[in-house]
Length: 66
Image 1: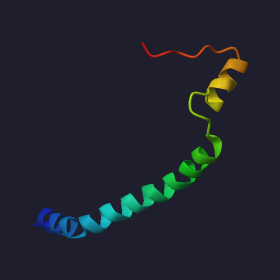
Image 2: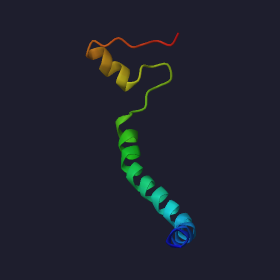
Image 3: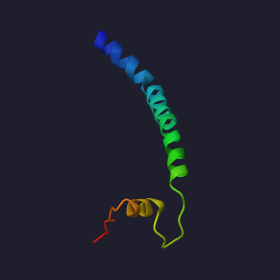
C-alpha cells in the first residue's frame, strides 16, 4: 500500500521535479557558457584560432583531420 502511495505522489510531482532539475542545470551551465564566450576570442576565417596559436607557442603541433 505504501508503495502505491509513493508512486502516486511521485507521478504527481514528477513534472515539477523534472522542470526544477532542468532549470538548475541551466543555471549552473550559464556561467560556464559566458566564460567560454569570453575566452574564445573570435578569429578571421582561415586564420588560426587563439588556441592553435597558444599551442604553437608551447611547442604542441596541431592534429590535422585525415
